[in-house]
Length: 265
Image (cartoon, rainbow, N blue to C red; front, side, top):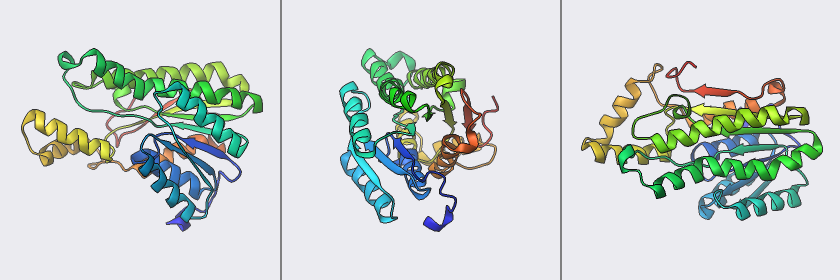
């Protein structure tokens, strides 16, 4: 697998990937490692984080695992300070922390709302708040925020999640304009139906709500995707790495769909 990626675009770069214990975060951390980066992997799940760190080290790349809860400002502050202390700098920040699950709007209570916004939006705010000053000092930085297709079009039974992901896009565009003069590019990716552990859990929850089989939910979803299949975490990781690379130097403030054709705006 390591021989698949020969370019090694991120040699001498230090990259933080939040929520890197599974799914898109894990795939992204591994891709950066294969492309030569020093990868800082962070997650609230210590065992998952350690497993990814071991995978990275097994391919001969440097990894810095740091346990952090992205919803807690002190955790994020300590994570960034530790990353800088061990590596000397931060070149790239990938904000990938997130969670989702279906719930009818009238059943969403204040706790549901605050929890969803904390994980999907506030965590991105905290990480940017801590990392951007380091990037300003070096007049260089690349930030890629993971939003979602629901952050552009909305979705029934996902109003709290959709609101948070719309917020990620708004934050991305605002930061891009504010810090362009400092050499910092900020972009977002908006995945659609990507086959991850979170999607499988949401499928189980939805199937229980509708009293149908999980296979039926999968079939309905795939029928709405023009390319006729789910996307993979590695495909999303490929887009993230492009936006963090020198090939994307003139791109900032954008939100890119990776949805198999489901969304065209």
